[in-house]
Structure formats: C-alpha cells, structure tokens
Length: 245
Length: 340
Image 1 (cartoon, rainbow over the protein chains, first blue to last red):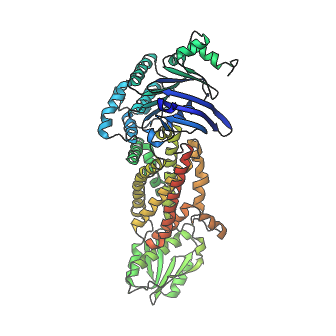
Image 2 (cartoon, rainbow over the protein chains, first blue to last red):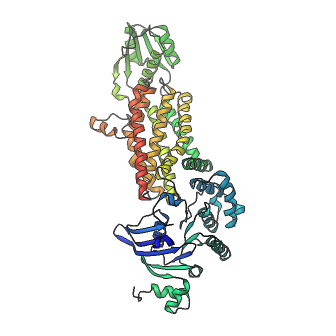
Image 3 (tube, chains in turn blue, cyan):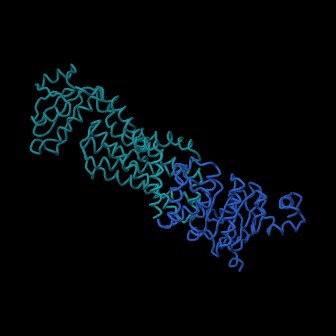
C-alpha cells in the first residue's frame, strides 16, 4: 500500500466551500524524511491542502493519511507541527509565555520545555528576545517565533505554510539549513511557497493551480520533462492556460 | 493539564493588559457610584410618623436613616397631607400597618425598605412573621415604583455587560489573530478550549463580583437585608452567563466591531425586561427568555425582600442551566473550525 511507504498521502481529495470547489482530485504523496514543496500562486488551494493534512480542515471527499493513519485524528496532532500563514501569536505575552503555553498544550512537562525553549529560540536566532512581548517584535521576528513554536514538541511531520515570508535572505538560508538537518534526522517537511528559488531547494515538488495538482516530481525532473532552463520557466509552462491538463 | 495551560495563559494575558483588567474591575464601580449619587440625593431625611410601635422598631428605623416622629392617628394624617412625613406606621397585635405617600417613588421606596429592614431586627415576640405588613398608599401607588430595585438590578447588569464584552472580544481575537487555528492544530479538544476560557475568565469574574458586591453593600450602603453570600453567588452566576454567552456569540462575529454590535441587540434590551419598567403581561413573558431577568429577580429577592436560598433556587438553576447550555453550544459551534 502506498500509504505505508509514504509519510503523507492524499487520495483523490476534493474540497468544497459551499458551491465552490477549491480542491479537485488532489493525489499527492510525500516520502518519509523528504522536504516537499507545494508551489503555486495565491488562491490555488495550497493552504486548504495543508490544513487538511494538519487535521484542522477536512476533505469533502477522498482520503488523507499521515504517518499511515487516516486524518483527521487528535492522537496524530501531537506528531505534527503546523505553522500557519498568519502568525498565530498572543501579542500581549512575551515570547517565552507563548512558547510555554503551546508546550503545555502539547503535553510537554516543565523540565522538558525549560530545556527545549532555549534550543528552538537559538535555532531561529531569537535567544536575546525571549522575554520581549511579541507586540514589540518585527514581522520577520514573529515569523521566526512561529517557526520555533511549530518545532517545539519534536514533531515527526512539519507543515509550514509560507514559512519564510518577511525573513531576510541570510536568515532564510539558515532556516533552510535547519530544515535540511531536520529532514536528515527523519522529519518529513511540507513547505508551501510561491517563491521560485525556494522551490528549487526542496527534494520534491508539486505544482498547484486552481485547486488541481498539475505536476509532481523532483525540481530537476520537472525542468527536464519540458526542457526548461529553470523552475520558474517550468512553473509558467505547467501553469499556463495553453497547457493541456 | 491543557485546561490549566489555557487558564494560566488567559490570566497572563489579562495581567499584561492592564487597561482591560481595569475595565473589568473598576468601570462597574465608577458607574455604580455615579448612579448612586444621582438616585440617592433625594432620599435623605425621611420622616415617619409613629402612631404605635415598639421602641426597638423605632430605634431600628432611626438606624436606617429615618427620623421617627411620635404622633396620634389624626396628627399623622395631617402631617402626611402636609408632606412633613412620608409615612405613618402602627402595629396592632403583631401586624404592621403602613400608610404611605407614594408620590415620589424613590422616597417612598426608601422609606418602605427601611421599615422592612427595621422589622427584620425585631424579636419574634414582637412581630408575627406570618403576617405580612399591610401597606396602604394614601397618595400615589406602588405602580410608581420605578426605581424599586434599581440598585440590585444594576449590579447584575453592569457585571453582565462588561463580562460579555471582554470575554467575547477576547475569544474573537483568538480567531482573528489565527491563534485559534494554531490551537486547533494541537491535540487540544474543543471542550477544553471552552472550559479553559470559562475558568480563566471565571477566576477574574470571581474577583470582580467580590469587589462590586462589597463596594455596593458596604460603601454605597445599598438597601440589603439578605445574605451577602447569596448576592455574591448571583453576581458570579450573572458573570458566568455573560461570559459563556459572550464567547458563544463571538463565534458569530467577524470583527471586534461586530461584537460591539451585539450590545444594543443582546445586552441592552434585557434591561427593559428586568423589572425596571412595568410591562404588560405579554411583554413580561418575553423577559423570561432573558438571563438578566433571573439575575435581577434573584438579587431583588435577596437584597430587598431578604429571601434565602430556597427563594432564589429557581433563578440559580436557570442561570446554571443557561451557562451549561451556552458552553455546549459553543463547543458544538467550534466544529465549524475543526470537526474533531
């Protein structure tokens, strides 16, 4: 079975919001330990797709498996780290309180998160700002704190919705290095993006357009298949209206 | 465990948001004080003609800011006419008869309340509890009793108003800032979120209820013959109902402004149905569907009529039931955001 060899599997997933169909027969499989990029223009259904994977939303029809088990399932939520597109932070509270809160929600003990919080803050370069209220953070800092919060509980699967928006190139590189390290240690990572150069950094890539998955493969494969010189060209080719489905 | 984390976080947030905290705790006191001065200015120096009453009763009247004047029955009638006294009182075989000038409802009610309070203090030998005091309106009538239970009603309303607003907006922000979505991506259960909110804000409303009740009873010295604990209980239940209704309705609002829009629709109309105005029977029935009706009813029974727990048991049950109902409805409504 496909769903036993791959970490995240979607089978013929459809999603309707009222009359409007936002996902059309999405088939997708993310192997264990891969960094998988979901690329597409805004409004193409990326966020809906990752919300279904994270168990927040549910498909109208079709099946979704994470770690071999059907989603949504509360027991699986502890294995998933989710970073939403908007920074889900409590502005009134210092970063430390935000982290402690979500750590306790994930069932971490005090000794555990006391040790873990400095680790994740170090990772996103925010060690000096641990006790600052989030309202005093800049946009990029909030993004980094959100990332730190999503990896707090050592998730096996990491789902990141546009993680590097508003983060400068140097730090972006550092974050990517960290993602590579995590994927080396077996964490499966799904990243959505609309930035081409980020897409190239993924092990595997899926392109989405208007609720459909239009192409899947390694960045290299996608380029080669159409003889394009760059991912950007491939994206335009696959996404173009002239291209037959 | 997760509920505890929710509660701690809410309290932490409030601690860091001094203005909101001040609004919850101090704004009701400010409003109550203002209204107290506006309504209370006319109720000083009330005189009551004593035709025949035990000394103990007269002394108790005096303690309740009433000037007792000994007089005969005909003198009393004359003074009532001249408005020197607001009422005359006589006791015949344990039953109290009061003639009162109901022309100014604020004054006559203050006098009646004081006389009721004075009656409470007497031993059973003096007065037969089974006999109700007979009040005869010489002028005016008790229909004029506009501000009868204004104070008690106000405690309930102010607590309800502020708790409703703050808990509602706070839960709404959870959604607009995306933290609700983040929460729903964790293994937390929907009912744990709702319970966390109720307990977190509940802790604050306990403090709020305590401050308001003590302030109103001891500082503003409102008419109060019943148990302080019962007043506290009802104030707290009022807050809990408002809290659960607030977070429930916030799921139907999409911005803070829309939450404010619920005030004229949900909160303000309730005041009209809580005994402030005399309503035709048809409209009174409408009041039965409003939480504040039960709050005001219970507070009036305790504070003005000295009722015990048995008298307010029904109100307590209704308020508890509403709180539970709103919580369950909220847990179900959160399904809109996550089914499990």
